[in-house]
Picture 1 (cartoon, rainbow, N blue to C red):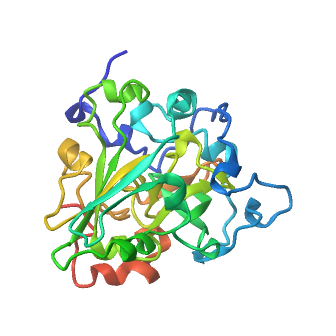
Picture 2 (cartoon, rainbow, N blue to C red):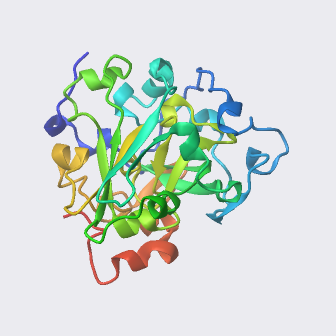
Picture 3 (tube, one colour):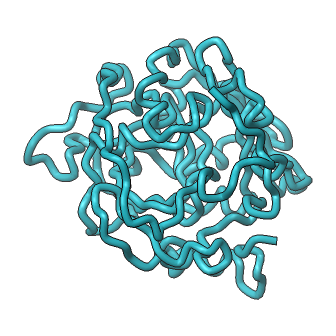
Length: 309
């Protein structure tokens, strides 16, 4: 199989444009999900609100129809398992999510290494359910189970010099076959400004549809930043580091002009004025900040940094 290096990959292959009128049939997820009881999340149940019994809504959400679970788990970008949208569902069964720890380090008063089950319990249950839109040139509506990253940030107490938060994904080429390629510089690194990371819409997610995260969706813990394009939401996180200088992220190294640090949802800036909701062939306008402008636009007041450099 030919593996393209970053300069050879057109933007349409990295994030499919919303103007696509057709799409090959989606493949339903075939991998079994991890046991929900290990994280205190329960299997979804017909008739339960949002399919998330025992968990309570967070402060943000949408009334839009949820994307079917089989599409959420069967159509993904997770290059650690391949560049095809169905590759993660087919290949991610090799990922082991126990034991798992997340190191929180850098410019903080209280650095710590958290076991995944301890990390899950840092916030109360009422902060664990958010039905949010996510966009990558296509869009989905997903009921995430998690809590605001701000809860963790408060506990570790960033120093006054901390201005950015860097997230690093697991590096394990034996179980993440995409990392054997030279497609990207591994491990995968993404970052946010500290004020972006503290915004209550920025989540640490541990589950979706009432179950623990499937491997292909970023198990056992991932970032969800719903007003930014999907590649900003790091998956399978093993390190969170607070730093003073703006980190050089994986996609900045690969294609900084198209996928720079301020890759907020800016449909005109990226030429993606239209998007397609996964599961439908109809198109819709891509909203600035993915429709969360009322909540987050103030973070960028007086600046055009939500546009690409």
